Length: 311
Length: 291
Figure 1: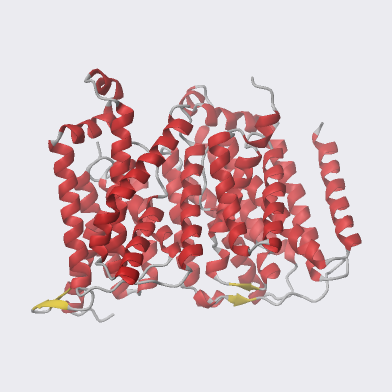
Figure 2 (figure 1 turned 135 degrees about the horizontal axis):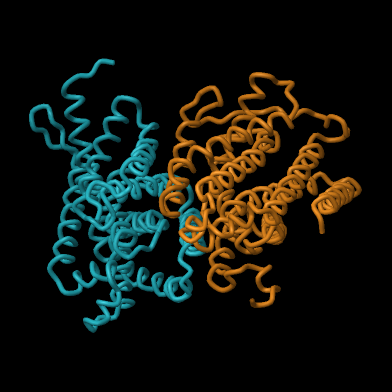
């Protein structure tokens, strides 16, 4: 399928999902749907760096929370600012941080990048905790507007629609990368970086493109969060759940194509929502971690890999 | 800012003691990452498991936390051997050590942390022992026993392991396995067995490090993550594979952190490790005493 028809299909699917949610007219459907689509965005963003180039980013919460807190700041400064602009700003900030971290550490072995991103999450959390303007350790309240702009109805519906839109953008980007020379370069880095470098692939430049895109999308996924939770404190914004889910979902679904993170997010995210309702909210967070460990041991190519013929 | 002399001296002294404690926390990673090339980012989570073992023994049985660690040591050793076995079968033998093995250890970190939350809750826990309250005084210098005892235990463990690794056959084999597995095989030693023992040892240090962690400060399950940055910053700054470098780096970080929290407030201390890590990676990635 060419790029334009693919995007049209994505939009049609997103529109159909939104239509079904509206037809159900159940506010829980919007809350649960938002979470699952948010994980599709986060998982795909992680996969652009992790799955395509093989560099593991553990600092997902740093980028995600940067997006969320940039919205808190913007909302305090200009309360009438439309959400899409906040998303662009949050994405830009997170992307720049990704670029900077990548520039400092990507010239070394991959594990140093991973360790640096782990530490980055702690540092960004320290900065936010010490920053009184966004509430510091006490957290910040964000009043969610009562009704949605443009489409009417509850504001939650608007948030869900925005997240679906982000999902379309991220998936279209991921698939476009896979089919372009950029994706070939990424795969070369993943398979043998030294050989790629020797064959004239500009590895550092490509890795920086991947880190920036990946970090930027994570920031965009985080930007609407303050309006979703209405109360954001560092402990919840930097919760390890986001990081584990964003890594587990692509690994469970399969990291080699855009479809993997979607399958992973729908299955694991759906299962978590189901367990949250039926058993308890403490157990549902364990699911992603346990499934991730099982999958990397038993099915290293994820669910997508199970259905692909062995090459 | 008004910098008084005894504030400065005491900050440096407690930083020194803190650094000794950091060496005990980092030594497990110095073995697994520095010598075996296994990026066990879950190590701090297992240190916290050690803290909770000490907490449990202390609060239920009234046992001394360090004694509890000594009793738990063999169990941690066996757990480490088991984790290495899974790692070997799932990743090392398939020659697939990068992405998935990192995710594996990240998963272990998460499962351990959530498991501790489910078992003990998210409140801060602490232990009781006679040496936790009082301090020794030498002129203007205060030596809180709460830091001095962990420092001594840590120093004994680091020196003991250093002697073991440089003097005994098994210890030398562990150092050799990092350098040349084939040569080791020619010496009739099984590299996988050696690595399993070494990884078990690195886990066993987590039992001790955990017990002294809960003496130094009250713990809750998620503080392990603060230690990931610290531990790897120390190992990288010290130079992978060098215990001496690691110990020096631990003391440097301890002093810098102590000065930071004395003069800027304790909430800034976690950021110090990241700064040290980034500067080291950017300026001298082989560390102070790297190979």
